Amino acid sequence: MEANDFLSEFGLSRTAIRTKLVQILMDANEALSSKEIEAFLDDNIDRVTLYRTIKLFEEKKLIHKIVVDEQITKYRLIKPNKNTEHPHFHCVRCDKVVCLPDTPLPCCDLPEGFSVSNQNTIIEGTCQKCNK
Amino acid sequence: MEANDFLSEFGLSRTAIRTKLVQILMDANEALSSKEIEAFLDDNIDRVTLYRTIKLFEEKKLIHKIVVDEQITKYRLIKPNKNTEHPHFHCVRCDKVVCLPDTPLPCCDLPEGFSVSNQNTIIEGTCQKCNK
DNA sequence: TATATTTTGCAACACTGTTGCAAAATATAA
DNA sequence: TTATATTTTGCAACAGTGTTGCAAAATATA
Image (cartoon, rainbow over the protein chains, first blue to last red):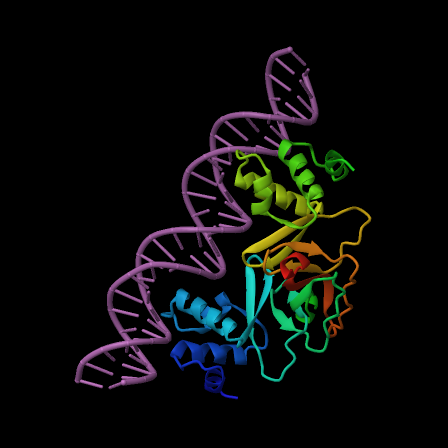
């Protein structure tokens, strides 16, 4: 799937940064922070523009936000027809965040009157690479 | 259990703010943000001192940090002999965070070579009160 | 082409948390 | 008790992440 198809599908016009952002996230095998995304962008891209684009993508549900801690927030592309509700693994050594698509989220028993909109599970530990 | 017993048990000397912070968290039926804690403290308490105390409590494992999103981080007291590994519910309307102690965390299947140190689950939705 | 709308870039700001350093408080020793 | 050392606090300043207002640039529409 092309980056621009993503934009069209979600009713967004094609601007340079939007196409680039989709491409970066498509190519990435992990969730990326805004800092990491910036490193892939041309130097002259404004930080504010990137933040606004990320926010737009969130609202239009092109991307999913993963809050690792106060200092680390990462984003990954939501691939159509793919299970989006799965845990994420955060390596505390290299700070990489990867999806764990094969692990289903648990059904949680909630008290009467509570309703759920979404569920985030972050498993922290050390990844394969850092464990070597 | 008295607030000061907490401090002694963890090898911390008793200063005004420490005793007060333990008391506030003991009385709270929910996890509190530093802003919310500040509201319970005397006006002349410095923000830095509070942050430093929170950090100290975290290191000494008196409290547990729950990162809801970039803007909201909450803290709750770790009660000795109580299960600390349970999901938390974040109400997106009133922003309250409560423990779900009766819901066990799922065992997640991790790829080979990964090791886990801890696991955070935040369930977002609307609480009983806000659903009325 | 002319006009309206959207997107961008800049400056400035808000919020959360941190660091350095000196003053105050507390603990320890004489 | 007094003197000394250690810990804790308060202040100022800073760092990182994200936001807002506004004008200029780019894009879409008539």
